[in-house]
Length: 242
Image (cartoon, rainbow, N blue to C red; front, side):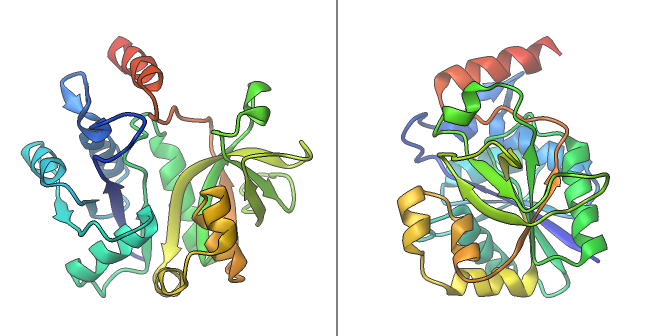
């Protein structure tokens, strides 16, 4: 089974302008993510971006990148456009890794890929145990409700993804990495954005609303996503200290 890793990225984030190009240890955030993805040895890695500045940065740091249009509404739509432009028919899975999580654990990425191939799943994603109780009430933290608790090497199904919770049972912090079986990715992008997806600002709900199952692998921990300047300074401090 062959996996292609695609990292969607764009400069137009409203809360933290030029986020992908912010530097940590002299290297941009998006290039850190590229190098992490590459070090998993799962397969080829490509950054898909709508901004030439990101393409230039990734390539100057030894990475592969492809320019996409400004039309994609979500990261998944962007990776599908990249796949079409790359014209690759020799891959079984597409791994979508967020370009703003330079602290993502390499072993978690490898585990998700392994679970996808073992279970021949349609879509897989990651979640971590919630250790900070404040995360339950924070609507910026996306949660996933699974149909059962995690056991060793289990790959339970997601019941739903939410920003607000009604129960703490089988609720985990969702980590925005997805692995798609190719035909399922094609099906996903053929559907219009669902009302649920738009209302909650969660693209994965488009899959569930169209009866596409999503399996969830347990991550070792929650990486810090870079959404605000505070996040950037926090992860910068951690990574520069290391």
